[in-house]
Amino acid sequence: MNHSLSVSREFFVEANSRAIDSCTELEELRKVSKSLLRAWQVQAMFSEMYGAQALGIQKP
Image (cartoon, rainbow, N blue to C red; front, side):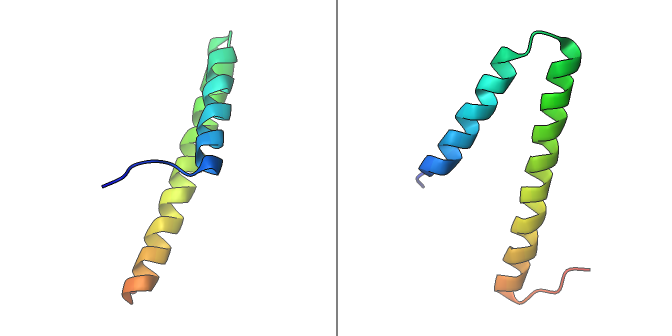
């Protein structure tokens, strides 16, 4: 299985990696981390929703 990311996803990873690297304060790092955590969960929600839809499964 190929785990390569698309160019746009690689860009997203790089941009956020740089945001993390540029953090100089703990509170700033917390904000960036929480933002990325939320984005990850939104993406997971959409993946579940569209995966269920593609399989014809009703989500509760």
